Amino acid sequence: MKFFKQIAAIAAGVFLSLGPVFSNDVSSNAPDRDELYDEIVVSAVGFETPKSHIGSAISVITAEDIELLQADFVTDALSHLSGVSFDQDGGMGGVGYLRMRGFDRAYVAVVVDGIALGDPSDPQGASELANLQTSGIDRIELLRGAQSILYGSNAVAGAIQLFTQKGEGPLSGKVAIETGSLNTQRIGASSQFGSQKFAMRLSLDHIESQPKSELDKHNTQYSEDEDYENSAFSGRFDFMLGDNTDLMVISRGGQASAEYDGYDPVTYAPVDGWFGMDTDEWAVNAALTHKILENRVILKLHGGRFERRRDSFQEIGTGYWNDGGRDNFGFQSTVRANDAVTLNIGFEQKDERFAQGGLSEKSTDTRSYYGLAQVAVTPELHASVAWRNDTHSLFGSHDSWRHAIAYQITDRVKLYASQGVGFRAPSLYELYGEDPISCVNGVCGNANLSPETSRSSDIGAEFSLLNRRLMMNVNAFRIRLKDRIIFKDIGPPTYLGNYQNDLGRAQSDGLEVSADYNVNSSFMVSTNMTFIDPRKADGTIANKQPRQILNLSGRYMFGQGRGLVSASWRHVSQRYVSSVRQEDYGLLSLRSEWKWSDGYVFYGRVENALNDHYQTSTGKSTPGRQVTVGIRVDL
Image 1 (cartoon, rainbow, N blue to C red):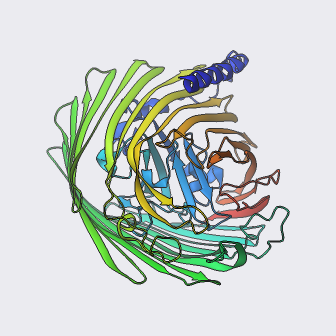
Image 2: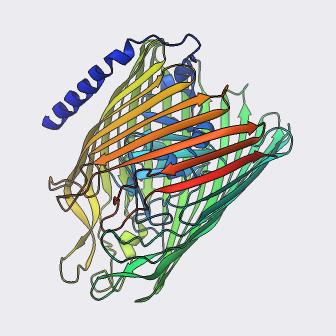
Image 3: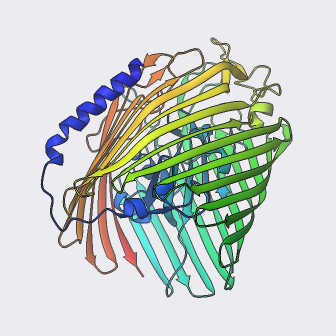
């Protein structure tokens, strides 16, 4: 209760401090914000639904937002949202940790056009987003809270769904070229085409950089450059087979190579040397959609494959390799029973496999059934109820459920709430993984692990002021996680360990507050604040989870919309490792662009403009000031 009282006091202070802003007159030509309630989202219930009907906390990032942010990587865009943090081991290409609401990346499901990015070869089956570029992305929908009904066992803290752009219009293309500090170079190209029978979009991107040593070089002599290269492709092909039948085929892939510093396998002393990881990844997914009964019933058959291979190289010690793969097949039917009730019923079969050097391939399979009903109780009151059953080949049958409600009190105020439960089965590495250096008798896995179970609750309000030029959202949440799987070591001098269930309940309570203020048609200010109290099962503060995050940004358009300047400030504080508080940090970013003529845009940005020394991973520096300039050309 003390934590929530502190949150309430801070939120009240912020609201009162903005009082003079609320009272200002605004330009009569500022854009109307009715689209907040008319915006259509898909990820919350599995079919197109107005955002005003959704009982979950949800954020949307559009392709235009990505361009304005000049975000090369998906994580660059996600980091501006409330409840989200992204930590990385050193600079570009280092292992990334997307965290949401006080939980690590293993508890966030990530899906691109139906392709789940969770890696079966990752220690916890998590999605590695450090190499995921934004090319071809049309929109990103981020759902907070339990989302296991549609996204499976990893969606404890939330789910992220990315949608690629569909080709349209005559054959056209776009080229983007960037150069900047740390010997960073990027080139991207895309083409698209669309007709009544066929549409396609292709994109290719290559980025390379040479950041300095990732080991903390503050007052040390670490200096060796860490080369990074990443080449990625994506393609979307849409076939209109008939008036009511469509086939969509998605293919994505890429190769990345990241050098970083390592540790002596005997003394564990940091080594400013030649270590690294090569990663190959590809995925394909196909979805056949057929509409019947005047589009009141939509039938969807889908299936795909995901493959990821990681090869390490080391100056000291031995390298290793990990291969992970997944095949999935499913069926979904969306039935509009009447004007008030829409049903989403589906089935999915998922087969996962994992192999590493010196270990035979291991596999599991999961068969899932789910059902969801979205109901308009009244024109103002909308509710959803959902259930899912997962039958795991090792852990048997588990049920999950979720319900949510959205109440549009007036056309300016919406209240919403949701509650759900889920489970996460141990990953293949947690069950069978091996490492002769780090694990007890060379074995990291533990075949006696129990699945994790979770319960999540949300309650929030979304409202507008100043003739809808100020949009605000306040959301409180609580997550409980039982039998959390952790890597437990025996301490010095060897720190050997293995995976075990942490008996008891880990928990995270928090509050998210956001505001978007259109001062006039040219000037916009946005801010969001996140306050989290993440706790391990023993009651101590969870490692590396920031308890307070502030994002503040503003952008100004000039020259009749041809020019734009923007700035953003991100402050992260109260992070702990083994109950020791880590250094707080604040990052200032500056961006600008100018449309020279139709089809030509020049842009530039400065990241970490104040050249702040900070760490997101203990003992590893993050690059200082970085300057980038670029050009986008429409062909």
